Image 1 (cartoon, rainbow, N blue to C red):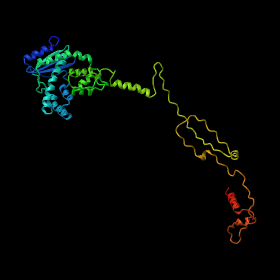
Image 2: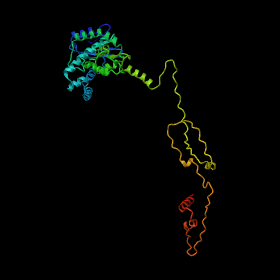
Image 3: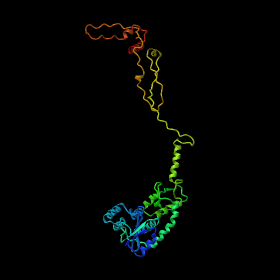
Image 4: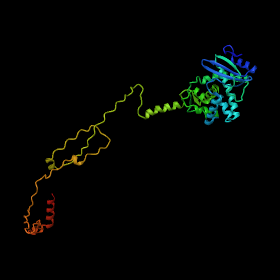
Length: 375
């Protein structure tokens, strides 16, 4: 005969008491609006449970406590699939867990499960006789003790919900706590998960512990001023205020009541600037040479240095000759070509002409002649 009905007619504490007095073994399943929870009994004592059977809630609690390595977890998952047992049971059979720590976490998990299920306002229940607990690790709790602890938590839940009203609440670290913080190891673990972006529900899932244990600890940290439920004095607020100053430091500040300037499109690139080198000419030379073209007006001033054009392209060449050749004062006499040898005639020495006038400075005249020939 199956025990089933609605929790509107029979409260969960009454059902637990009935199963305990009759020392039943099996699983008590509760369902509502797609949610499915279960509590397992062994000879009337509570040995395990889950408020959501689709999740490995006890295994998640072990992971959140840092008691499982990656290799051990992978091996336990493979064994759980092959033998159709729970992951925690597989870890225990492999000897990868401390028995004392495992029993303590399993007992705490039973209380968290009952507390979560007691908050269901409605739903249906059904008891399956002799259904085995896949994660039975040997820990058990008496029904009266569990129900008493769960009811105490329900009474305190109102104050906890006042500090953290929703699982979607965002928490951030307080930048300036009112006093020097003193934290336990569990509190430090919670603070490490607060980053201003995770919700309270996400933090609870990462810890793997029940709602009451995590949310009440977070609410206590909020009451001590170490966490903020808004952005008035947290790390997010500090970053926002620094961003406001950065606008001033960057030179772009919006003045209240004034229209926001519209960014103008970038100007067209200026035409290349021609570099013209001015050369001074002699008045006589400038009269005979064509005038250089006037430089174009400078469209803009550019900071990039420009390499000037080669001098030969800008400065016009000087025409040669620009003056009639100068006639020598003493023209040389033609020299007869030697008839016998047929070779080139040898030029007579300059000294034979200079010696005709003893008053001439020979050295100066020689240099003058050499200069005239070089033109």
